[in-house]
Length: 358
Image 1: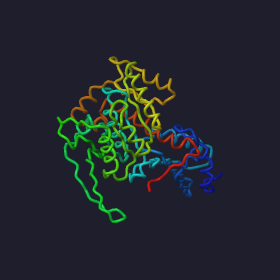
Image 2 (image 1 turned 180 degrees about the vertical axis):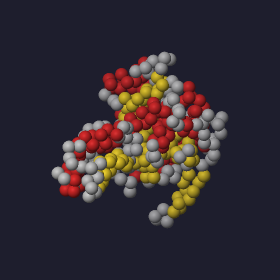
Image 3 (image 1 turned 120 degrees about the vertical axis):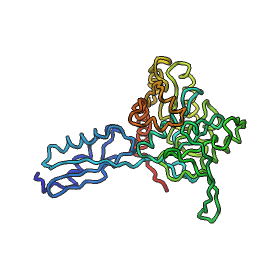
Image 4 (image 1 turned 45 degrees about the vertical axis):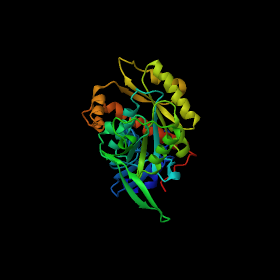
């Protein structure tokens, strides 16, 4: 085949059958081949659209394409990457323009659930995603402190299509992530003593009456244990899934199993388990082993790292993703695994539709 006779359709046919290394289905089936440009000289430019900016090691796709096309008489072949976050948009029923809602929960307190939730939000943000962080731990709202947000949210008025005036809360922009929390509305030493109905109302308001705008991901930091918030979420919105956080030791894993059971009972898919505080104190590998026993994805481990505690205490969780942060590789790995698990659940089954924001 001479360079001048190479066509776009020939190249598309040649690479369409290449399996995506993360999802397993072909690039053609997943509609990831966005654009092919062939110049008269035989130079080829191929654009591949990833299902999330958090796609890990996308160079593997480029290498597979280069290998497949190496047998053809082509000039230089360059592979470019773009991304379009896929999602169920299951918050559309209550007016949310959010592609994926992710709950981060645990069976007990003290396992670093809020740290993981905040880290996930800033990990996705560092990769270019539009992210919101909802602190649903009404009784112990720690997110404002972790992200260094001290200002009070303001109220804005909007006019609906029917002419009705709607008041919404403007979330705090904390280093690029939109944040809302009960901690913004109470004094730091004030206790919240509410029964279930008030808790349900607060969470519903945080979802419906916050001006989230268009988001790729909304991360919800759940309260520890198996309480009312999970039921409220299951009744209000559809979630992309839940991430369960636990430490490696057996006593923590027992409580994590209860959290998994809770999510299963209210039909919230469990994306997998994150092992936090891995190291000499609590051990290593307990969560991974338990995930394998339960048939759930293992979403990575985060070591006991002093810098995570230091930055959280200083309100600088976002700084954990700076290039010189020792915790960054672990947090990036967990972020990518979670984002890809959502993409897999949406895309690996051929018959499953992907809904766009209306």
